[in-house]
Image: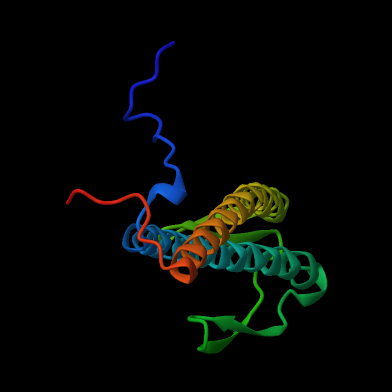
Length: 158
């Protein structure tokens, strides 16, 4: 199988780049790293949210609380008083503003699946972030060497 140039970027010898080109590469890597780190943080927050949902189902939806007063969240900061009417079923946020009713066993399975899926995504993203960080350190080292030596290196024909 032959691969076209669009499928795989060509490797560039960093020492052949000018300090301006290296600065541009560094900025691109900084931007990518910032975006990936923000994505990692958001995925981790989603995973924690699902873990809290599991904790709530396991600890709060019980026959002992049926008919007792509870606080029902309307938003992240607004709660209203209510009573637990059904301890067998819960409303599950399945994403993009859609909610479905599930029995507690199915809800636990749903949240466990989401937690595992996010865990795998976080692991993959973490290795990508480590690779980008490593690339950034190499670019910074080459740029530092060029600046210290006063070398423009690898002339540019712009």
